[in-house]
Length: 391
Image 1: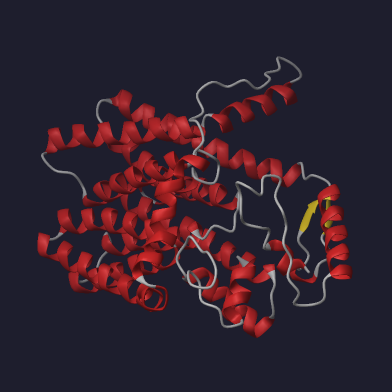
Image 2 (image 1 turned 120 degrees about the horizontal axis):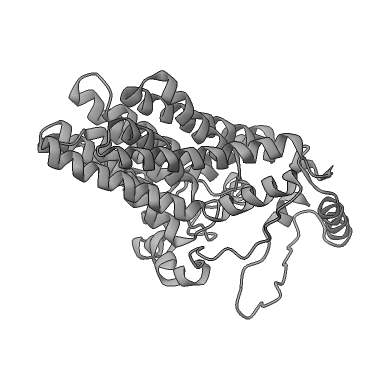
């Protein structure tokens, strides 16, 4: 990420001059900061913290409209804790921020034209960070306009979103050609998805202690963490069933529920692409809004209890992660490379990075080429761009 931003700051263009699988917004944003302040991880960390806070705030606003401020605080806590950990350079958090706020705008007050324009701009912003999240926003927010307004409004929103997104990617389609841009953003992922897809976690084989209580709590946490993807699917299924029963009972469905359900369906696909802790975050945040609303409104009561129970487990999952992070910090050491800006890593890892940086600096002149050969260079042809940033 930082190396891509630095290459842009030096005049290179993504997709044409180097491989990039996501939208251009994050690396151009960081390139601007790099040009002004120099290459540093600190800038991204600040931006990511702001994005996480914005996602949690959006979840609070959405849930407060459905269930009041007290319940919304619980949804906010679930969203905030899951967005805080884990973190990755993947620009999903910034894209997801705009997805959430597109739904906030679409379901809010104000004139229809203003809401359509605002939601379209936010959808295009999501697509500028990650094209697939732009599609998720388009589907979920489009469902809101379709149910809340006349179909023409949904068409206006879709057209505006598509036009603004096209403007974002048009310069790259011109410089690199539309076929190459398609391959970078969509084609490679479709072709190689099987290489990184993980089996769905069903059978837990971890240890489980009966004593002492601290070991029991630790193993219960590991068990809960392992089954979060399954809990998310159960939660999405409960929400869908509650929505179907509500339509049958009332002959209507709130537009906000429809938007959240469509978003949930999109994020189930996102989770299926790789069932790890990074890919659970968008669906968990979405269900942190939807499940409490279902728990308050669903009939029969058993369905409401199921929704509340799944939400409670997801809330425990996120909160426990932050409690452990606060009170059981691992032994860390500061990485001395200037671009790290005080970033810490496990002691052995930090010392190893410092040693690698020292060796590379001693052997390669500034601006010289570095190539890191992976263990299976015949299968993986890319090297490690992190070294370009650290050295």
